[in-house]
Image 1 (cartoon, rainbow, N blue to C red):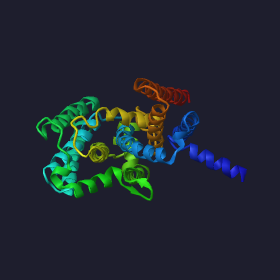
Image 2: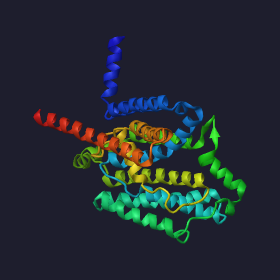
Image 3: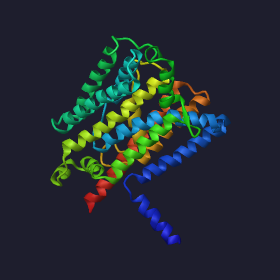
Image 4: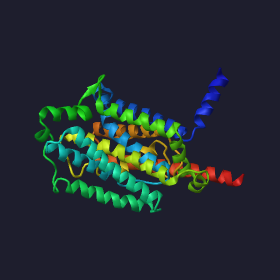
Length: 338
């Protein structure tokens, strides 16, 4: 029995990125318990529910960026797509458009951005930093222009209080089985995209591109299509976060999603997704998002200043990336030596 357990553990740890994911989960437990011992209110049921709801935004953004990082690229337009989604949906609803139609239009706008990013990077070989920097400015510009350079009125002024409350309940304030709907939404998307990248050919191709794009091409991988699919996933998740922020505020804010692309990077790399491409698990991204939100929640509850919160999280992100570089450097040297 002992040998079987050792064999299972060895097999589990042999999965690319699993070690980092497990480490992130252990770190999450340690951080949560430490904050709880300092301030027992951290352990309260309401705080846990609030933590799960707030974590959901980081999880969705983490999924978005992780897909891109695994291909060896980056998406700087994520935060601006969040803002565009929130503003497009809120503007339409505040003018009386049915919420379902508003959601579809917001999603369509984000999907266009995702496809454009995929083609610019995959087909036209633009550096992802430059390509998505351009779409970042474009989508933020759309967020400003859609309501004539001002935040929207409350969505209830257009669609009515009942419809407005229902929209806000579905995406933010409502609960199912005692847990906020925001978390269930994020969990559903996590399961779908975890399956896609872990169990399908598209997922294998995403890892292949990030590991060695030339070898992937020789193996018959359609780099343009696969890269575009990764950016489309990023667009879908960004759109959902925009809708969540819209529901939270009950209106559209032109600055919604500001810096969220970096939050996505943080959630991914804390959970072991390599910014060098080809390595990482969405399970780790889940843990990374939870670590991020637990740190933010815990530091806030013990009265730490916002500046200190950012410094602590920044140090952890740098440490996570540095560890990845060191580990990879050791692996590469070992392979070269053999």
